[in-house]
Length: 219
Image (tube, rainbow, N blue to C red; front, side):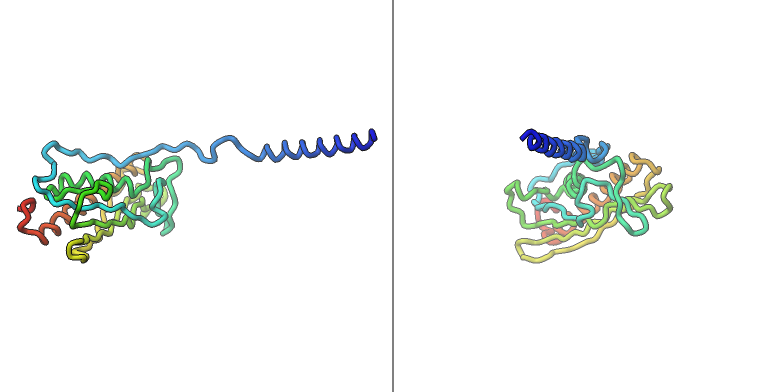
């Protein structure tokens, strides 16, 4: 009987020892190192940069992006392959940050329009669909040189009244970072994004007014 008890105790000890070894495989530390989070610089909006009276509402749909770009990681391109910046990231997914920049651009570049979101509940004849096709820092001059930030947006203007695609456009803006540093690269992302957003907003305003030249906001 005593021998049986010793055997049971031995098995229990072995089980406990195994549990200790297994528990040692589980780390309580975070799997990744802390990252510095960045936003795209906000555009300066002047007090007089507001939609005109009777501005034409345009619905801005949620911006799409390929899976590699629909993330809060800062994308880098080396030899045609996408990687991500170590130790840094975006404060929100890249399409969300770009959409905020685009909404700001409508104030300065298309005052004849009033940019609205679907959740605003505003009836809008026009809808702007946009996809962020490129949003990366391209190392085209070597690993240690300042990269070229490229932002490409593919856009479609939908006329809901006529149930047609009124116009479409592909916009690309490139800005060379001033140095091979995180902050300089992020600054280049901001400048390229603002350039692309301003062009997209201005183009949308011109296309809508070409359809409705007699609209009060277009005069």
